[in-house]
Length: 389
Image (cartoon, rainbow, N blue to C red; front, side, top):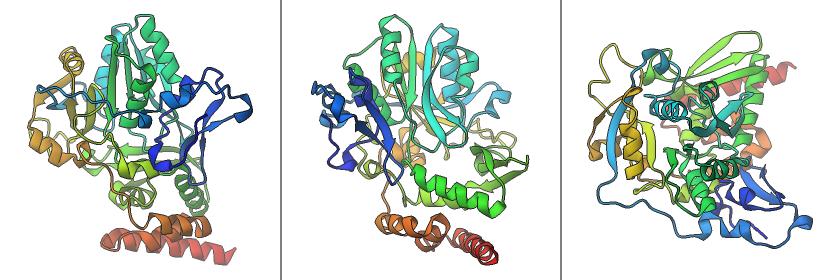
């Protein structure tokens, strides 16, 4: 029976719950707000399949080939579609091509602000929900099982997720399928769901209204000035620049990453997926002109299958070769795992006592002066509300 001894060695990928023949394993949040497998022990038949598919119990799979990786800059040809995606839209191009070819796409959807999970999409309407960045860990549920059935039935499958989720899928399948394409997004670490929920609760109390929608990467002021877009139940909308957003700041500084993120074995070259996607912030080519701040995708092609898929989508995506050195300098997590903040333990200790705003004020780096002062003003406002009640 599966037992988690050290949480650093569980990514919550979901391979174990898909492998269980009795379906008695589920992903449940721990007190910090991270997904871990929970077994109904009384129903366990000791088949050990859950342990056998755990990617952390196996040697890390690699896609090493002297011809790869190959790096590209890409941007959707449709400017209208570019406004609906977080970056250059490479994933949207791949997804549209797979659907137009009669295939199936798996990816993360965001429901009711903070419910993130994987789903199966078979048409253009279905893949629309898979667009945009989601900064929380997605519950893959039984999508590995569904993907396996699709693959066995000869369907073309595009499965997207973080590196650890792709590794989990590969470990569960335990064989290569010519009709499977894997696409991973570069992950900067998984933030705590509980920390977000507490932030949301305190934010709603501060504003005295409920948050009904959240866009993590709004581009209404341009890709270079991406911001959080928060919509309230009364129809009002609030925009906060990402670099000055209080929750996002704690996330970027690693105060509440998942324990496995600080030793991630998948944030390195060669990558585990056929294709790896990220923002190409340092790109200065023809996709970044004065009137074009729609976003540019950094595309790492890691296998011959990934190369084939890229070559098949010229109707959707405009792309060009770029240098490896510039690609790696633009996105350090292509080849480096996130760094856990040494303040993480004390942050959570304070978080459980005092909530998010007060804990963030105490633990956010003071070198970020503007953000720190912003946090200070927010906490002061919260205190005034509490005193006046």
